[in-house]
Image (cartoon, rainbow over all chains, first blue to last red):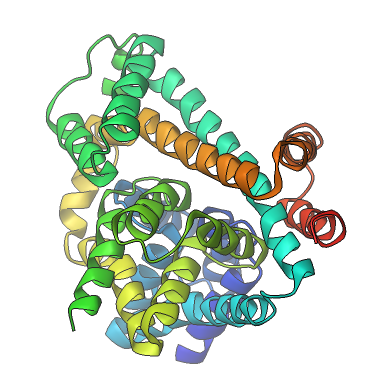
Length: 186
Length: 177
């Protein structure tokens, strides 16, 4: 059982390109299809619960499912299988790059990657903005964007504080100017 | 001793307010590592992101593990990972009943929606920092070429990001060396 937990989450992590959310179907394949630890319905419940909470999705899934299957040991094994192999790869890669840093060729490679990472982040920013407009309506979205820009970009207030305040507000109060708030409330 | 505490905090806060997984977490961690504690430069953080994007597995834990390791070895890597993983996982395991009540509630929906514009701005500002550091490093022409190529390949032609990063490495090795 413990060996299966390790293998299942190891495979889901090491074959999951594009971060945690994209590995969820792979976790499903292991947990529901292959080992049948959870039914389809149980799995979507766990996923929905994990989505209610902040923090990385894949370790919440792995830890919770491991815990259900084999207690604290199961939790630790599932987390180790999800995290350790890919962290190890990451450290090896970065150490290799850093040991060749002085070579102009490697320096050029490192510099060329910055604009690409910038484009990726900009496209993520745009998708957050688009989704926000659907959920909040354009007035609230633009308003929050302007306020966030002033508070973060100009006043340099810590973003965790801004987001924390918004989360508390969202928990206790209804949203203003919200065209689609009816759908959200339902 | 105090470094352990700082590293714990640097990963704890992004973990507890980062609704929405990796994309929400990246700009928050960047603020801690680059702006607040100044352990890394924007370029170093960009390099980390590029490598994390190219390798398999969850991005968030790869960054936490690497940063901890670079700042103080295996034990500090463990501290960073613990700060990232443990808080929300603990809540998930021990407050399951409460969570069930909130699973489809308007509160959760509102909380995930209301922070999206802020996350968009954080990601936008972070993107700008990468463009501007590249501009200073390699000049406007190379920066614009890479931005345009990146946008076309990723957004228009939907090429796998791994190949786009590999392509930019080849470009850098040839034209920026």
